[in-house]
Image (cartoon, rainbow, N blue to C red):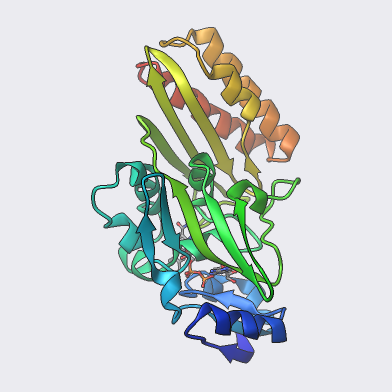
Length: 278
Ligand SMILES: Cc1cc2nc3c(=O)[nH]c(=O)nc-3n(C[C@H](O)[C@H](O)[C@H](O)COP(=O)(O)OP(=O)(O)OC[C@H]3O[C@@H](n4cnc5c(N)ncnc54)[C@H](O)[C@@H]3O)c2cc1C
């Protein structure tokens, strides 16, 4: 990597001032992903290092939300005590890299690559996270789904950086994270499957399922179809759901073999929810 210009500001205001001068600057957090990205070894880039900005290391909570600064490391999140609503995210982060990578790697860096989704993305999508973005001139909140283009690819607005991630505080009775394939990141050779569900009066009261590969797929129609269904689910309902997810994934553009394998994971999750062994 050849950096033509580097800034390492100590405040968000200094960072936005730098972005106004260099709108093409690439934000960098711990660089555990930037250094393995071949795109960055080929051309000179201007770097906006965010790692010295204290506000981006902050964690705060209210009754309804948990706010996590973009540069908070995965290990810090994994070690946060007494927040049961964080368990699905912690489980997800534990699948990423090694302990030494997680000690450095930031949650923001996992969400923000322009080329492919990080492994935490589908779970954050299921958790309905929101993100705060800063550009040279403004600050705004977006739902995490708004960082996915219509074609299902990462779509972080250019000329901005992520400052905070906001998670609703709510518990999930069932959570599931399954990584398939042998690649570090979700993509052509690997997927990351995430699902969350709650059960009330022996029926599914809420269900969310997302898979990230080359694109991210979330089938809201399937989620709606299954909401309110009594457990255990009938074998026919499980097979129909598997089929519906597979069709949605293929239509969205996932390779057929990956779509089939993701649909199999949907089936296994629903079987588990129904108390059957997968
Ligand atoms: C051995 C190894 C194993 C790994 N395993 C996994 C894995 O299993 N799953 C996985 O998802 N990743 C994996 N990674 C990649 C990487 O560690 C993670 O994606 C990590 O979360 C990136 O965080 P970072 O702080 O290092 O981001 P950086 O490398 O600094 O940045 C990553 C990307 O996000 C952008 N960016 C960073 N912060 C911001 C911000 N605040 N606002 C806007 N853009 C920003 C950068 O421009 C860049 O495009 C692995 C890496 C290594 C070296």
